[in-house]
Length: 338
Image (tube, rainbow, N blue to C red; front, top):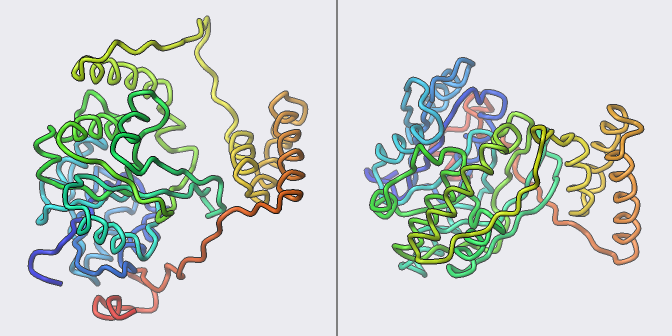
């Protein structure tokens, strides 16, 4: 590795021991080798720090920032400020980057030097790696910005972007007041400085689990995204957005994870995953309206997929254990040759 690497990968870690090894291994297997990984241990109380130290011991490209818990915004800002390079790759501690991810994003930026942030499409998987859905994003700047302002999507897949550090700092970095929608806030500010883009190719596995932010901070996210969009419209001189909200006498109740993921998997054509979560839904609520809805939707979509011959994308990735710090013993130099 050169003294100053080309890319700094910033990984916030908080109690991530369950999936951390897979995430770090997926950085080691990158075909683009000129990187450093800044792992911000944000006050973890599990074995996360121990795992990080194992990887740092066998691969000097890993650096550890150990801090008291500051939350996702503090962890990301500190990690990015500690970077040696001007290009920051995001990565979450429970996800997996495809081996060619960095190489493809780096080549895109070489060919499009006016781009400040480039993301990719992703596949959402469950804790066991079963595919649930594919998320695709607008590829051009105007479409990305419009999708955020109109509340159609988050614009870019936060966990798999590659972005310019100097533009990130100029935009004001992540802001604590918009934690849990900090990525959307950042894209809207960076969009006023230069171009955003996304590569129409799946290069990332994003893990769904019931401890995730979207599952546990949904109501707060909705409140903050509305405040953010009002602010962003005012800054751009646009009319105030109108939000249609139902009057609720009681707080919104969580939808069953099994039911939701069964429907999402069926819609995306992943019927093995859909069946797995349909069984869990039936076991938990055999006579509920949600169970009936999931059953009806699975049957219809299964018939349609059969008749249309549609098949969902599938991916075979390398065995991550080969790149684990405690795996067969692959060294940093061997990782580059693999």
